[in-house]
Amino acid sequence: MSDKDLNNTSRTNWAALETMEDEGIDYSDIPPLTEDFFEKATLRIPASQAQRLVQIEPDILKWFKAQDGEYKALINAVLRRYIENGGEKSAV
Image (cartoon, rainbow, N blue to C red):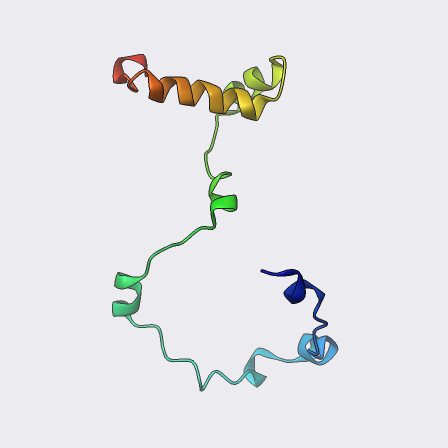
């Protein structure tokens, strides 16, 4: 998204939109979503959001946060070292 996109003022009548009932929305130009659509669909997550998808157990996160320095950088360093050492499954 460019700065130009961010600086454009919306001409949407938000007040009218907020008062609109669902029944008043015209969906006629939107094709129905079929089973075939969902079978072929691919979930695409922007890279900036994908970085926040890993769930870390609370006690592990607490330990990393208690260490000196930036805990996210430390987690990344630990994971990188694991990968560089061949990602031995016996270490898991």
